[in-house]
Length: 103
Image (cartoon, rainbow, N blue to C red; front, top):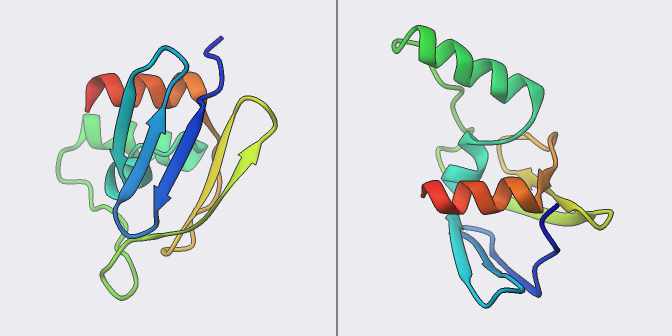
């Protein structure tokens, strides 16, 4: 299990910077966080996209995606509410670390 970060800095229109306990720092854009949401509906959409590259992604009202808020989910992760109304799915520390390694 990934230990919690020592610092989180969310720039609502840009991205999330994470300072980890091992001294490394990660940056994840808002667009990446939204696209890679761990929610069941987004996992299903990513699977559909793997099968059919012509799958249409949901659009953002107003065209600009932002994070409206973020809150800790216990000791194990973060829940983010996006400007397109999406707010399900918990980004565990382990999942955030994996996203950062792929970015």
